[in-house]
Image 1 (spheres, helix red, strand yellow):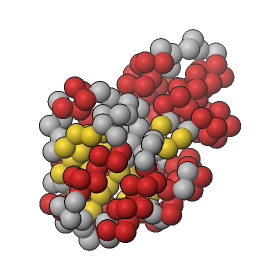
Image 2 (cartoon, helix red, strand yellow; image 1 turned 180 degrees about the vertical axis):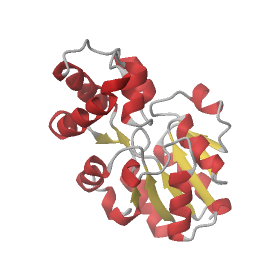
Image 3 (cartoon, one colour; image 1 turned 90 degrees about the horizontal axis):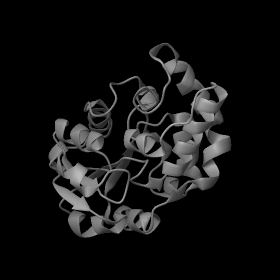
Image 4 (cartoon, one colour; image 1 turned 45 degrees about the horizontal axis):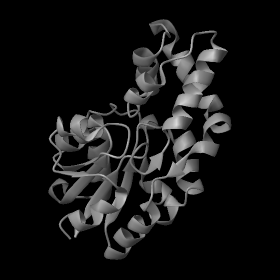
Length: 216
């Protein structure tokens, strides 16, 4: 294989979570008595920490960003889980990569409280066990800093030059590149191919299964 190790972003790469995220942001704002956000503005912040999402896409002031993030986390399961699905070809592709012997992990800006149940609910756990799921609550610097990717590389003793970081935002690609890995932009997710190309990815795909010829 050209790449023996693959680090996947979750939101917008493995799972289509956009509507669930937007719904939960709007629900949070309603509970805080604030006006609804522009859905497109919210979508543009997916991949960043929650506080950044509320800072950039809503009218929540700086003093209440953590409060908004806390409310979001509490209401996310009841508002979002029923509209989150895998992108086409995800399980089949993960199965193929698993059969090939690829080392796989998830590197996400999502906290484990919501990330782990989704990995289980959607069946991804068959190929990426929970001890290889890395979330924002590890208290590392968030994407685009390389910290999450570097921790995975260190924990699993993976060589960065044999590692591909796959993500749908420039933050994922910048994280991977800063960690010394190759990168693959997922242009079917939350950012367009044009946006992803600004981060100079090694590869660009338009569906999840387009990864296979790249890996092999």
